Length: 175
Image 1 (cartoon, one colour):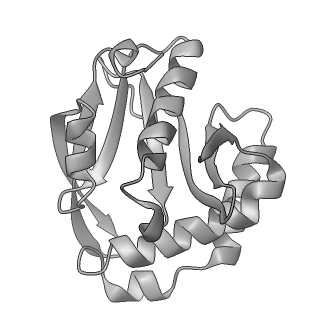
Image 2 (cartoon, helix red, strand yellow):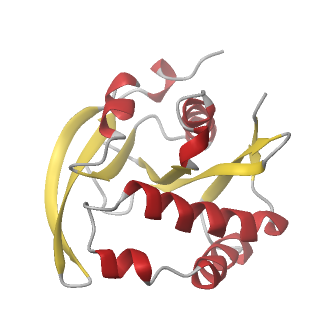
């Protein structure tokens, strides 16, 4: 059984590894190969360590920990970053190693985020996902509705993203 818990500083190397590995298995063909080739576990470690060490940060991270394989996934969430009029919480990232997808850990991470946001006073949530990401089906299965679209340049590559929203997080939290 996968354990979902709040991340600790000691988890940062594993979080960074999951982040890089999941990008490399999920985004070929969706992102330029150069971006994926230049990913760095060390840079991701520095980034996530900075998030966890910042006492002012409102971001929280959960990890999915398998008793045999260790940390197999993580999520990061907090206040919505663009002052959206409806969606006040945001799921910034949710990544799971490919070989552990489809076994319930992603759903458990998602539920932990919804629960934590609700405990912090947020009743709604938004997330952004690349338009061709196969995870779109996962978000739709969890009740997410496509509410917006944008195209941004990521290292000079125009990438289209969809926003999925949940108006009532209590509806996605299982007891």
